[in-house]
Length: 84
Image (spheres, rainbow, N blue to C red):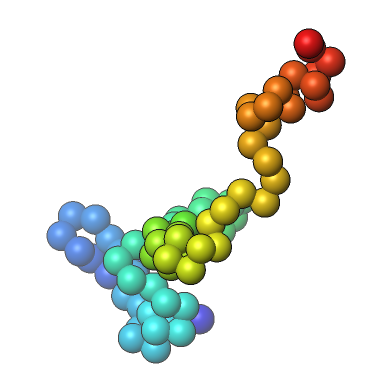
């Protein structure tokens, strides 16, 4: 896709269509990656977004218990390392 470079005050910028913004879920920020001979624009990802709500729901459902015993309880950590 070819886009024009436009003046935005002293700096310059590009204008992206609403269709592109919606298709790639672009909100307020983009990540600009400068590679040899090209720029790559990527939507800023928030990999942990929504975790707090998911953890809250897990707690409410009782799904937040440990799957293995605590290593510090009952000397398990010491027995694994050979320390008595």
